[in-house]
Image (cartoon, rainbow, N blue to C red; front, top):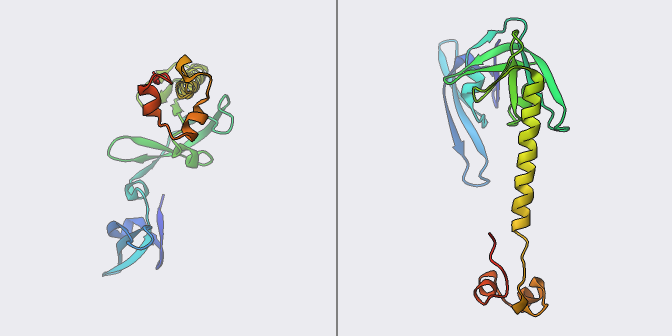
Length: 194
């Protein structure tokens, strides 16, 4: 599988790139990449929009054997499972990353995903293994519920509770009068967040 990088000079086969340096412009703080590539015997220079991980685009790719599928939780409906056949594997310094036709873009969104092997086991990125897709789905839903519960707990901790010393005045009324959270807590008018 050939990877092409879009540059100002047009599309360049990633296999011909000799050197690439990511830079940040001083004016608008956008990023771009200086790219040197071979064309015949010459090494030419051009610029490209910043490619966050050039190694992802230039890593070796090998075809996948039949029977491997990516399974993941649907980001739009987190209680549903999506699946797609693995058509190839991108080999980098740490692992083999599956390449799929439909779900390839979703793999980069940090959605929880695993690989369903022909033996019906689901192998997840952090080396966990599930016996079935149902077990993977159940664990992902459990983790989602735990994350939501933690978010609600953090939100509840952020609620400001006024003490009896506040004499019935609200937090907003004290803030409007120029009090800071630290002053309210110091004078015993508001409980400190746990």
